[in-house]
Length: 164
Image (cartoon, rainbow, N blue to C red; front, side, top):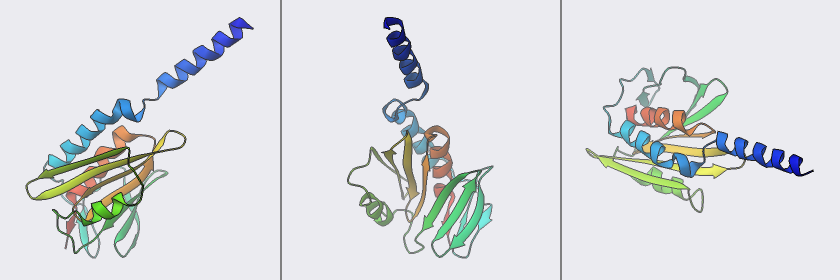
């Protein structure tokens, strides 16, 4: 019986070590988002009636409604929301997004060259996260388990967006 308990404890420790917590990843993710925000925006490669934007390799435009563009990467879905009346330095979309949850686990703001950007992360059940990145009147939202790859890609999209 004692051996069984140790086996269970060891298995639990190994499984826990396999997935990094938000706290363990937080600094790296905040830095990755900030690097994308501060970088020169990618050249746009997709367009809609009101907005031009860059989609990284593997992400495709699936559907479009007024002010929302549904993006897909395999089974993962992203929502690109834009308010064409808000400039790159606007905090309106950020402030309205903050009100969706009582408190976000990560709430990081970036400002540079007349632009306002942000990263919001809310931990969800089953080691997944709601992630929102944005620049001015543009935001990208998804639910993910892979913060390290999704956060930079999402900020890349938000940073590249050019409202017409």
